[in-house]
Image (cartoon, rainbow, N blue to C red; front, side, top):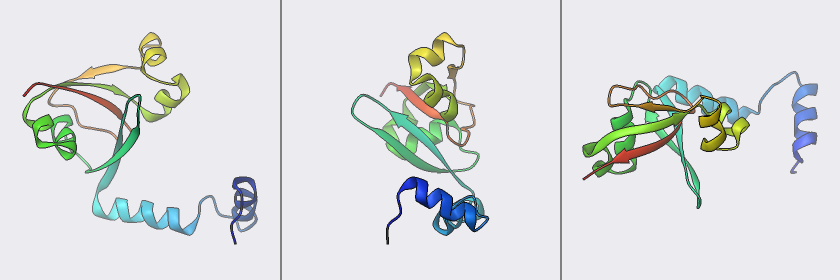
Length: 119
């Protein structure tokens, strides 16, 4: 049986739950394994990447391709909630929510990153 979004929300609420068992399992597994997610986005696609907690920006870039890590210069960074609220980089920049980070930057859960590199 498949419930629509509103029905699922009401069902979980009636049970006193805020999220599904599957979502809870995924979150607990990520926490136990020390993992987190960051995002990349472009005109064609948005993608989630899994990394170890504490990865620097170059290490996170290396998850996409080793050339990204080797040639890392900097990355544009916006927090996920800010990115969604601003509907992209442009408004986030106008509101001062966009940052330019270097090699020492430790990636946060939910960061939306755009890597600058040269190989």
